[in-house]
Amino acid sequence: MDKLSAAVVNGNYQNPVLPMDFSDPDAVRVGEDYYLISSSFTYLPGVPVLHSRDLVHWERIGNCVEHLPFDRYAEPAHGCGTWAPALRWHAGKFYAFIPLPDEGIFYTTATDPRGPWSELHCVKAASGWIDPCPLWDDDGSVYMAHAFANSRCGIKHKIQLSRLDPETLAVVEDGPIVFDGTLTQPTAEGPKMYKRDGWYYIFIPAGGVEYGWQTVLRSRNVLGPYEDRIVMHQGNAKTNGPHQGAWVDDPQGNDWFLHFQDRFELGRVVHLQPMCWHNGWPFIGLEQNGDGIGEPVDEWRCPQGEAVGGLPVSDTFPGGVPGLQWQWQANPQPEKWLRRGADGLHLVCGSAATIWRMPNMLSQMLPGADFTAEVRLSLTNAGVGAKTGVVIEGHTYSAIELCRSENGCLLRVLRGDVKESVQRGQVVPISGARSEAEEGIFAEEELDTTEITVTIKVTDARQVQYGYIAGGESKPLGAAQPITRATWTGARLGVYARGGTEADTADIAAFAVKF
Image (tube, rainbow, N blue to C red; front, side, top):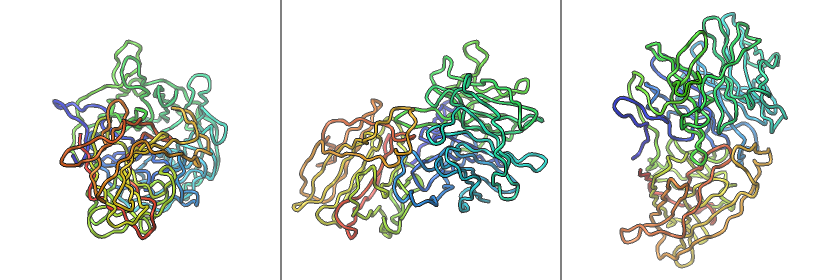
């Protein structure tokens, strides 16, 4: 299977509609087309752009950010980079508002969501301002709601509303705190602003990523006061933490809500919920336990619209170029890290860093909880000391690595442990961006060849079994290794080259994922 799509059974879509780590989604409809963006942290190009015609089937069409204009992103900055963005269509342009928690709020624009997108423009230079969302009001005023990152500025649970310059979109007035959820709605964040029938609405997740809920604020005055109501929670449903996302309507006049669910090692996958309005309040999901609050559905009738694309997972790297699903672990330098030309991926060796610290590690989101990948590795064009491999990266990560030796190659399974302790859901300090890892070898076998097909079997038990194909059969190498999440993301599936010199290349003929 080269692409991944949502399952549809008897005309009903099955959640999640995006079964990959598209964290903090926001979406808009323009005509009959829907567009969605998400956060991507230290992985670049970043803030991926997806397109759909029916809200169920999605294709990846580009990225809002090619690189970040700060020197620190020449190296991996785990937990930093692009956090929860907002996407809006205004006056013939797409606007993506993007927070960098240590640097401030920025925006980029495009007339075509496939790109090109403009360079980042600064809205507000600040530490700890996150989750921005603009609103262009009927009188020409522009506002921006945003939240705060406690780890950066010591503020939490609060939503602020700032006024922007209509021409430059820079903050001209920080404005009031319009909501304080400290006592009743802790971890209020991720605001999305809308206006409907004279009411101002701010959709906010609260309660935390893992087990939180969706709250909505409303007011007749943009500056408040706002009243609040919980409009969706887990209740008796199996979907934990249903919150943070986007309200969209379809051309037929139906309302929908896209939100994420934290599946820990698998990342934050995206669900689609039916939505309606009652007495001026949105109702999301389905009432199932008698408490008057919506609960997320496992399946629902498909919205009208044409099915498109799918999410690429496999790759043959035509012309030596990685597909859209791949991201570097820092600001991209493809002219330095790749040898383009013939089909297949040709990675330049030379790095001496651990996989966790390699800017030139190339990875994609984990494509599921149960899959196999086969990857053809070659060090024929590399000298002694060169290495290439396939990694499942997280705070504890593992890889199968081909190492060029005097007599051929060694095939190893290694494991890396990030030194800083990071718990699920715990705020990662800024120093996490500079966290280091220690690596050790867990299994090793000598080979008499410089080329081999390695196998990676990921299971529902959140483990990975590495192996290789010899004599037409797959043989395991070492014991199964654990899979853990990375900083604010699920585990990542990556390829890399290191060791040797910059004159050495590691060649990857194909990357095939099977479900």
